[in-house]
Image (cartoon, rainbow, N blue to C red; front, side):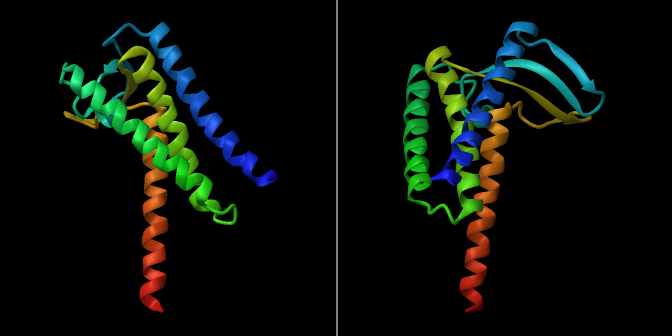
Length: 162
C-alpha cells in the first residue's frame, strides 16, 4: 500500500502544477498577450482553448463539440482510472505513465467543466513554424502517452523474440 501513495502523489503534483500555472497565467497575462521567454523559440501566450489537446477542434464554437469533448474526456479518464487500478504495483513504469495521464486529464477536465475552455500558454516555435499552444496538463498527458507506447512496443518486441 505504501508504494501506491507515490502514484497518487504524482497525480496530485501534476494536477497542482497544472492548476497553479494556469491560475498564474490567467491572473497575470492578458488574453492573447505574448511574452517572449527565449527569442526565436519560446513565448508565453494566454490562449483559451475550447477544443481538445493542442487546440484541435478549438475553432468550433458549437455547444455539441464542447459536450462531445467533455464526454470523451470523461470516458477516457474512466478507462485510464480502470487500468490504473488494474495494473499491479510491480509495473512501476506503467503506473507512472498512467499517473501522468491521469493528472493531466484531471487538470484539463476541471477547466473544461468549470470554465468551458482550457487555458493554454506554452508557445514553442522556430521562425514561422509554431507547435500548437499547450499547458502542463497537455505535456503530462503527452509524456505519459509516449511512455505508455514505449512500454507496449517494448512488450511486443519481447513477444516477437520468444
